[in-house]
Image (tube, rainbow, N blue to C red):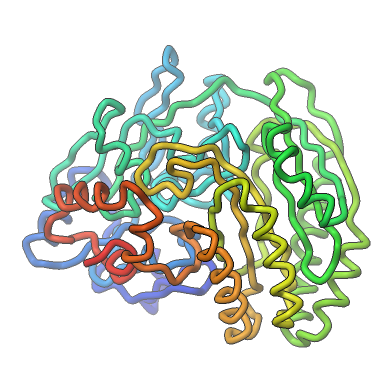
Length: 438
């Protein structure tokens, strides 16, 4: 909901707007009526989820659509392990829906505050060389198109390859059918390692484990590695107690990190010393729990993020370039760099479309000097672009339609679908004009 001032701001503080009107429809029919009226008046419409995108993809220059009343289960097909959810359902609400059914989502990212529509429309993903992003789990969507018509796009419809990851450019998603899997547990093995060894072993570990990722702390040789193994659902829960994990993950990982980032923002020259202390304090642990409880982490410290997808084989050399650049340009970076993987898929605008991918994500604390943050992101982006990197649609980047067309073989095919679904550009905004063309 909008605050009293009428100004909407995203979670990272990187995008804001003052919509002319905010609507919170109680039904799909009510939503369709709003879109039809907007189309007749030439007013742009933009749905907004939880505001966890760092780009301006959710900025509403006209009518902002709040989907908070379109949530929950719409239908269940246990034989095919499919569940249809209203598109405004938040990811953190899904496990409680699926657990009684003996089901789970195949993979998740590490944040679950997003709406299902927002997460899939921006290409949210987890990690795992044999698993795609959340959008690859979609088998059908219902949406309101640019004429205000309610349409369904099923798995046999080639347009689903666009609509499953549509950037909000095709319409307002109202229902999403997910292909689920049998519930499962995960054993998490978290360790430490020297950054050179971890980078050298990245490809082997990505292939060895179901879900593998690591974090490197700039200005140190310290890393945290996370190797997750899928297990049967009835595997007993093991490892640190809920209280111990709360202390480790909430009090230490979040609150202490926040304090250290605040100190680094006030005195950037201390960042290198702080990171050295943090690197020496890292330790290993192993625990087993329900899949979503392993995949999801609390992220209370606010930051800005850029993430690029590269061909999987390019990740180690790209990381070495980033390390060298940070020292050469004397960037003071308090946040660790995150490295993940994803399987190739066939969605038109997926960052993993047509190629197995590795992801390099860089962050800056939200109170860091803006000029220093921009310079860091610019320098990282230059390296990623030089290696054919594709930017995450919901994270900071400066790419435009001309440069993106060269990266996505089906780019113009997506634009053609957009022309059919929204010929009047009812769902356009400045961000989409930049990345897709007006």
